Image (cartoon, rainbow, N blue to C red; front, side):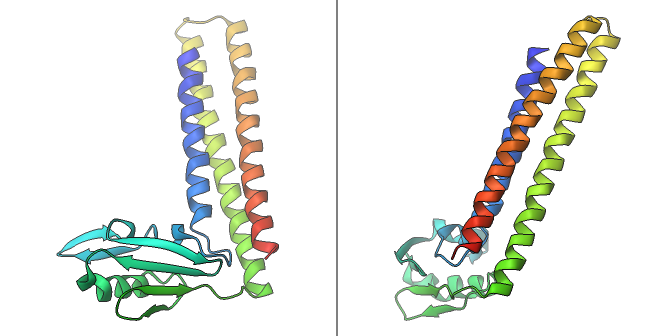
Length: 184
């Protein structure tokens, strides 16, 4: 039964990691290199992430600078950023690409907060789905007479405690991101 708990914790950790990755890509008014994580550049016919083709730095709170290691890829990177539709227009000066993050409007912040809240709920649903699968595993162990009914009840209680802990963690992550978006 301990393998069920270990597997469950691992899957729930992945849910939280995915949530944090999603949140890191949400533009909150501050320059964050993570907004470029999903931008792929066609580099000699191979889709390549920007962060593998260029140095990305944050010289100011609202400015991101992308400096390609191969100057000939500058136009390709600029084109990929435009296609990715991250909501920021790249400015190419021939050597680097600058991404200036505009101040967020109140309406945009509220929309971001709703999106963050929705993603937080989706993470909770994913965690509960992991719990449901683990409950099924415990019931199967009982059905196969590998554990007693008391073990089943104790296992289900421990599983619920693990789930509650991960739900709380997802709520903390979500609340922190909402505050970050609203406090700018």
